[in-house]
Picture 1 (cartoon, rainbow, N blue to C red):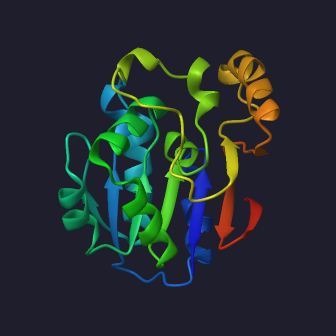
Picture 2 (picture 1 turned 135 degrees about the horizontal axis):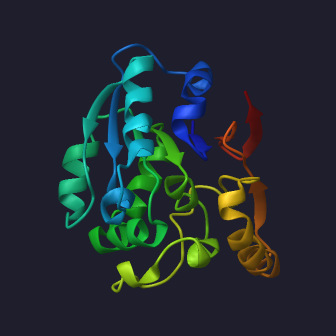
Picture 3 (picture 1 turned 180 degrees about the vertical axis):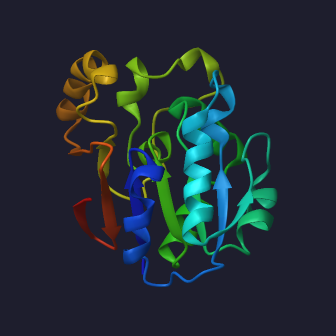
Length: 207
């Protein structure tokens, strides 16, 4: 059964997410993928908080980046785990590295086969059909080898993370029209919400 948990900020909701992971138990193996944050500056306190939240609820966390990896290397790292957390950061850079490693279909199939997928911000965006909304949020110059804006396609929903945040208000006003004109299903998520996708069913969860 496919289960995705798409969040704005994983550390804000992880304590609730685990209640709905049907296979969760202490020591569950999870790959923490910080690729999107590798081109970000500053203290990255939000990234460290995301990782700590996973440890705090009981995951056995292993760090792995898809940057400059082959699909064989991605498979070797992720085949042994039961879940992945795709971190926040630059959505375009993350998508570029997924494309370069040619691992999108592998990730999609693993999720179809039962691997839990947790996205945080950029990690939630790449799970959907298109990442176009990132053009005013993230610097595309950091992903010169990006082929297109097509997401992994694990769900047909485009998630707008951090909805209601003053920090992103102007950017979302610029980008929302693009998603509407493309006909995508759009879910607006504030930092205290997440989207639970189970097979073809999905629900906005609030804490």
